Length: 551
Ligand code: ATP
Ligand code: MG
Image (cartoon, rainbow, N blue to C red; front, side):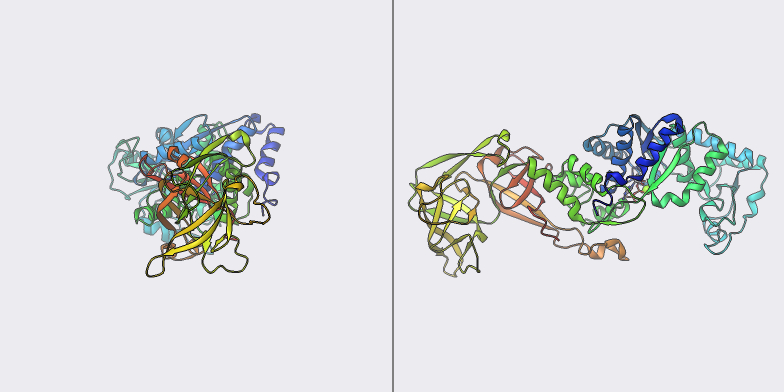
């Protein structure tokens, strides 16, 4: 899958290269990323961001951020802030920041021009009637009785619409194209509707708002966009995009090019659906680490580089395809394997008393932060008589080939000594509470003499260890394609979050900073939760397991 869609198959790159050779758009490359500020950005948007900003960087052009803010009732300043933060975090800088609402006046003037040309009219059909008149894929639509209203009357009605003389929905402005067009988008699409909603930027200045199809192409033209890159569902809107610009003879003629949306298994990439998960409390906010939002991925411990790498690996094609979650996870796993400091954390502690180790002694072991990268330095790990190991690194009745600790058996403690289990201490009802062990003082950084010890386990010194809460995340949905369900909320995974409140982590992690990432030896990759972790209560999120246990 990766080789098929690698960067070399980026067909948009080919188009742009050719355009530059042909001196189309005067050899310039100006792109834009145009989110609607009605939610947080998700991993699908990252694909579009990497493409739009990436092409601008590659061809020494520029890329604008444009908030497509023409549906005020669902949009907010909070969403705008989060979008800016996420793009910057991904590592991109926009040349200019614009809003579709910056162009409301110009758009209004352009609409008047279309009316004057006889290419737009004010229609009194209701929304329902418009739907009825529109026809179907196999049947031509019907012309509205208002279609041949005079230009003068259209002009004065449109002005009155703006002045607020009609109730919401009473009139719409429609393009006059072709009610028999095989492309339903060309059957006199609406350009403006009356809607009394407060706009976060223009306040109550407007009671009419332009539709997406009218706004987008003109905004592109005003900004001098050369390549307007969007997802495939806009392909059938392209004739309308071109029609508007052709009628208005704008000074620049942007070119719309469509590519396939990112579809990622076991999650949903739609702001509307993500908003539902947030609003109905299936997750704890837009930045919940289970969310495929940029904010969620960041909080889970993803790096900007890993997300850019993912976008590069999946490539850009014209064909819809589903990407396995493992592809995204591999990107962060490889990044953290290379770059994250190692540490030891015990998620389910089992107490070990080393009976032949003096109880008033402690040793400070100097351990490297990364086995292959000495430049990442070392840290100090205290060793003492009582240590904690992972419950399942001991087995009373070991299965075949079990290499960890068993009664009477030996195991190496990572970076420390070989210990032997001599006795199991249990409660009256048979629960193991402690192991009595002995250590071989000759095995620090050395193999024991005359025998082989295969297993190596991680541990922390009980007295020095720091308490931590560790959150383990699983897929947010129980099926690969939740959107195939009538109600995607019925396939939310009820066990997607497991919170472990009695974990013990090595002393050095007491100084860990918000968002700092680690490989917990043998356990996985984790990062300090940026929201809930406090100096006196450490909280870690599992970013990803050590290996791809999913496939
Ligand atoms: P959503 O359904 O999540 O709201 P959208 O397409 O309506 O998505 P916009 O805010 O309009 O979201 O999107 C901004 C840009 O991001 C658009 O150019 C859009 O095509 C692109 N985009 C959105 N979702 C994806 C995706 N899954 N894969 C690739 N690009 C996407
Ligand atoms: Mg949208």
